[in-house]
Length: 546
Image (cartoon, rainbow, N blue to C red; front, side):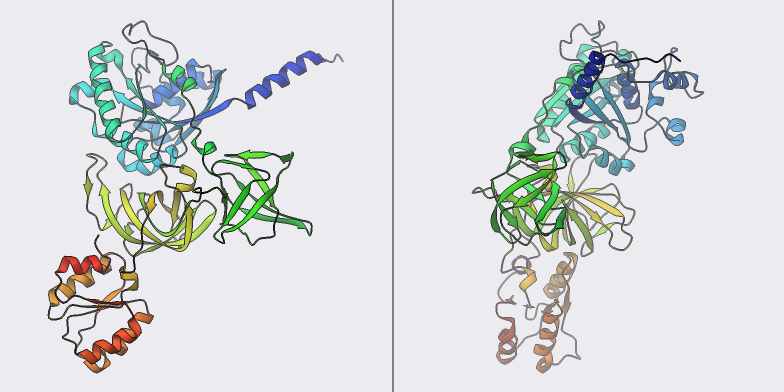
């Protein structure tokens, strides 16, 4: 029987090809669009024209009884709409991930749904993206006379999730006669919206997913457009270096101690570049030490950068465990260390987020209890207006104040996505209920409600009721102690019992000097005297309003 021998030089060339492929940059991008904007068709066209579709897949699509493309065109959306409901309805419901590569880059596509009821799916798919492609239907724009609310919502979510680059793919240009005037109007309005949202790297490209214009190849139908095609843009857009250049953040995932001679801390570099010999600080203990070795399966490294997973051995024996963090010891390089912060939250569960409720929060490798202290405002994703809210329904977005059981070590999400993001988990069902993007730490004051023992507003029953209601809405426990069954002689004991239970007492009684002195003897600075102050000032001093 004859055998086939591979020439050594062929084997070498094949290995070189594999090495070159492995070393290619990886770009993750997400797509979002309104109903019938042609989002799945665009991705299908991109896969087809880059020769990333197997022949049997293409043959199956051509034979499909479901074909919404007109004029004998292949319905490329069927390449990405995988669920039966998606194919039947012609919409995207779940997040579909696709992979393809060119000679310049490797790509992972997150095809996310554009419908408002699937906002949580879009947030999930876009959370790790380097580029967001927002589909805009040129024909729908002409009919509406402005960008559709869905397009504004998708652009807002892209800005909220901190996606570095956003490109508007103005689709269905063939249906508006490849009008330069129409494209210019859409581009102008999109750039104005992006500027208001603080997006810095923005592009607009006229395309026709159905005809293939400016998707992979430049189109003769748009001689007035001299910019890149969509694929050219994706192949050349610069990938951010912020995660590599910033100060070191190394959350500890696991402590490894295979024998008495080695103790290492395994984890993934979340930010910056960690080097052997570098001085680092362990949080929360704030013990300073030196990196002795950076260990991997393939041998020791001189340095490890984001997002490498390594094991770190330290010069000193310090107490460090899962959920804690090694950070750069350089001056000014420490992250925020706080239990109080505010974050933008995308709510993902049928049961609403409620003020006062406690959830499990997972931030890097640290898991803590997080109590919702207040909802500052909800964002109307259609109009981008800020509206008041007492709870957060599924797919809604709001700015929320949290207090955690243990301090977190974080940067703002705008500064670093890895150390600025967290997820919220229902402690009973273990379901992931929300995604949070940290904005900033919150300053705590000695005058906040957390240290208030008694709020005394003599002869102002309406103000007392308002204080109790406002504290309860904020998530604090507060009660009115003006019950007839609590005599003034027993009031100090009642207030002390409430203090030990972590409850704020509120009263509108006219207390005598002796009763007030007994309460102040254990409350220290925790008595808020409302006499001579208006209701707004009392609420501010109680920590309810700013």
